[in-house]
Length: 113
Length: 115
Image (cartoon, rainbow over all chains, first blue to last red; front, top):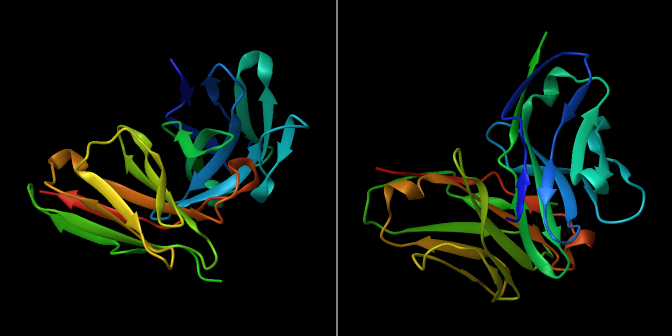
């Protein structure tokens, strides 16, 4: 079945440690890929997106993501997290000509001192 | 530039009632999408409007409807509310171009509670 999966519901990381959030997709064609962040009580903010070209994508707030076609993955990384990164992170997919985004169920990130 | 504005911020209704939510997009944006966010289902696409026409629709029952006005403001209506309709309803706006070249700007949402 077509889907986008975020295997980790909740991740806890120490401030200053590195972070990797996983995202896998299952579609016949390679979709466009997005990562969004949602802070408590807020809407979603786009961190980065991939639709072609360099498979390592740089985003805002020091985040990056790597597209791996062979693994159908688009994992989000940050070398050193800050307390302000605590939020919920959503991976999403879309296709050309269709304004609909399909979101994963999200990964909640907790930062401990 | 003002962001996407959703009103009201919170809403409490009882089963069987109907509700209307409002979304004002960023100035110049002509596309408005609506999403339902619940803890169990995550974000699910409801529909998208562009220049007063519905271009895309998700898999929701006919109780969920929407419209867009000539100034691009959009409303979403849910009739005969059910307990399962309790959710955060988010709208997002873009200029209406192709998805890879667009950036969705989300509002803070309307939190609907159905009692």
